[in-house]
Length: 243
Image (cartoon, rainbow, N blue to C red; front, top):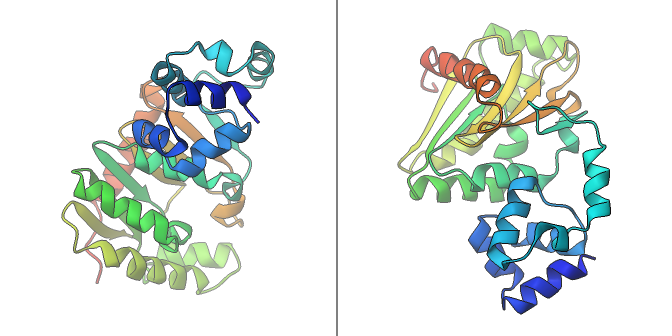
């Protein structure tokens, strides 16, 4: 439990719901911070500012030293060995923090489409003026079929892509949400906002859920982020409306 954070919130007369609203995250995320989970740097800075407290007070120096000695990169904010290891709040924070755009580029992205909370979040962000572009593999295309063969799941990937199109398609009544299909060979799945990106690398013979993921802060690594964002735009420009 983070007693210092709890005490600072009490002194500021803020509940977990209040903090979540101010920082644009889910209240469950704040409760995880209170239970001891260490926030991302941008959230630590925002929390310290909101509570008018020093970061060292809310998160003691010894825990910061452990973080400082952890393997890190000046370009990549976080690395996960497998997509299934990415915490749910990371996906939530990615989309909920968007103020301008959200982009989803995958073959199916069914793990998002099958999450009612994420669908509601995408709808809410679009209604607040955020442009949402969802780009999925054409279930009838050869690249999707080939990828299914490579993963030894046959037509299952095409079926997943079709299911994702149907689920995401429930959002098409909302202004600002566009859905298209592509017939390109994907080397990565890209999930982006104007602030950050999550890139899921594809590896021959393995499903995307089992392959590595990197998280990139666009303000810290603008050139690297632009490489993936440009790939997204190129795929979008060659895409089609769903049949």
